[in-house]
Amino acid sequence: MLNHLIISCRKKHDDRQSANEGIIDFMQYTEEQLQQVMDAVQAGAGYRAISRDLVEKLARVELVKRANLKEAVKATRSALHQAVGAYRERFDVRKIQRELDELGEGADEDSMKNFCLRAMRFHASTQERLAVLEIFFHQTLQGIAPVRSVLDLACGLNPLALPWMPLAENAPYHCYDVDEDLIRLDRSFLMLQARSGQAGLCDLTTGIPRQKVHLAMLLKTIPVLDQQDKEASQRLLDSLQAEHILITFPARSLGGHAKGMPATYEARMLQLVEGRAWRLQKFIFPLELVFLLTK
Ligand SMILES: C[S@@+](CC[C@H](N)C(=O)[O-])C[C@H]1O[C@@H](n2cnc3c(N)ncnc32)[C@H](O)[C@@H]1O
Image 1 (cartoon, rainbow, N blue to C red):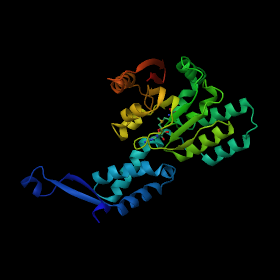
Image 2: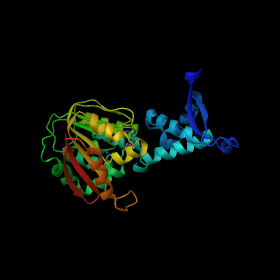
Image 3: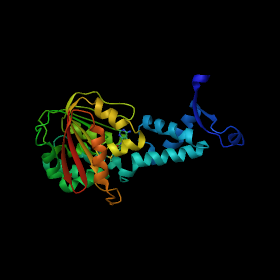
Image 4: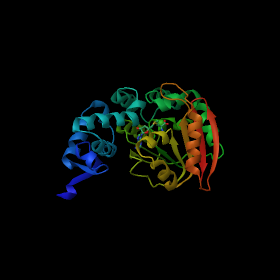
């Protein structure tokens, strides 16, 4: 029975607290209650496509902090919105998927690029990069081009920017995110491009893909992971089997405010490479601060 219970602790707020200041009381929740919270969270349309692993991880965090299941559901949804939903436009995934299917394997390069440009607007991160897409990857990757293999992590819809990347013709492209809708679209696109590689679900706070690659990409991902797990980014950078890692940070918030973000994120980057014999190259774009890390 005991291993069926997840035990957490919080400070007591009843009368005994004053008499026994500092005594910790244990709040318990069962696996069944955890499942109830996860199911309630994912009953909402905006949360259905999010990886169950991430929902579970955040629900566990909230369950120990909240007074009841209803509050835990609300707080878990809020954390998931911050991590995933805030970046996505509301769009009809099936309609976009159908458009891609109709383009099919025989699509000419211009039609495919036009589709990618339209689809990338549905995710804030790729949308913000569109204005500099023609130079973004060429400038940041020119020192290592042609790139021989890619691991794109927390990728969103960035795989659709592949036609603008200086890749070797047969370079495999692996990409992962926690949003199943986006991953399905990425996978279909990569298949139509006849690119080898994988597109799958992966919660980077609990799992790290093991592919050995020439280039890993962590575009605008570190701030998102920092909100979920303070150690995740360091673990990731230390463990990735990549010769180079392209790392970016937003230079403005989603609402368009700068709020000293470039300086804050440059300091965060320097903290992450401290004590490691890694080389960093920095590039500045109007909406994005970029580092090419060489291990
Ligand atoms: C700011 S967006 C960046 C998207 C993409 N890298 C880009 O720059 O175009 C953050 C992405 O991280 C994903 N994400 C959030 N938490 C994650 C986690 N724990 N593991 C993997 N991906 C996560 C979200 O679904 C979202 O697509």
